[in-house]
Length: 392
Image (cartoon, rainbow, N blue to C red; front, top):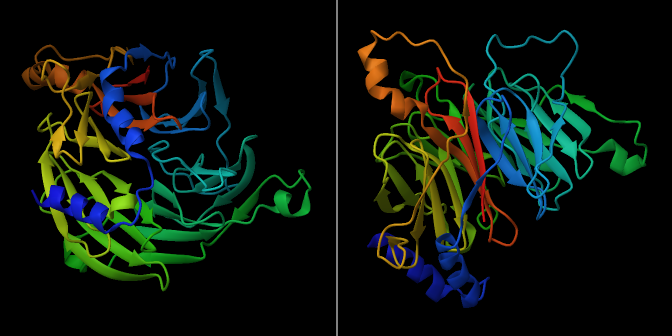
């Protein structure tokens, strides 16, 4: 019950809640009312990242390195050109696609990765005019996060976090002919503090807590770093209790809490101290927690088996319907490209259904909190396909 006590303590010591009680009640009731409408994405591969641009449009990034804008009402899809880096630059043999999309606090800039997955790419909103390309990493960019409207961070498979200072030349001079800058070196780089004997410490996700001015980074080896952004120094480093397949973070700013998804659990920590305050088991054990988000005190969990669960932080339990059955959304059929499969491969046959299930790699609520976009694709690396749906 430590998680329940933590949330209650935070609320009791807060002078006023940011959202009225009626909003929190509405948030908990919304999942009971949502129905799935699948969206066709054609022959693209796996949606890894998504964000609402406004109350009608969602931007999403795919493993096949496409940046797409989807209109939730007219079903049209606009493909945004991915940004190229310096001419003649070295491109990795394998492209991981777009793993992260973030919009600046004033909603004027959008950050993601470029044509080269090692690069940062920044666009101007709402036009998607190119602003800059950052070339500081030596391996794939897995996560981007805005510190403020002019600074952002990128976490990479090369084990570093690069800090960038973004200056939009067109917004300063008014000259729209200046469409893109190449930033050769980031403003600073934060390196892992783990001993070398632990091996390469790939950064899988980062989030920024503005209340404590702390950047939180998650490594593929199950370690969390808390970086003090006042001096760009690590404040603390600790290993997670459940370190397998740690790929996603989510931050609940009003109650000093962040969540980590792993193969079997969601773990909750206090970003000020790194203290563990609770754990909940995944309802799809073994498939892994692939996406997390907070909406008020409701945590939404997307899994590798294509499930969406809803955990009420205040009541410390998963949401249930009127029949006392746990609410669980299941991803739809989506689209799957048929692949050759050896009929003698018993392992493939045994695990085909799990491998072909559409993992929920990303999900996000619209500004009103009444619509949920969820997307992903086959869990297995060997399968090529996609899934996207609007729950409303």
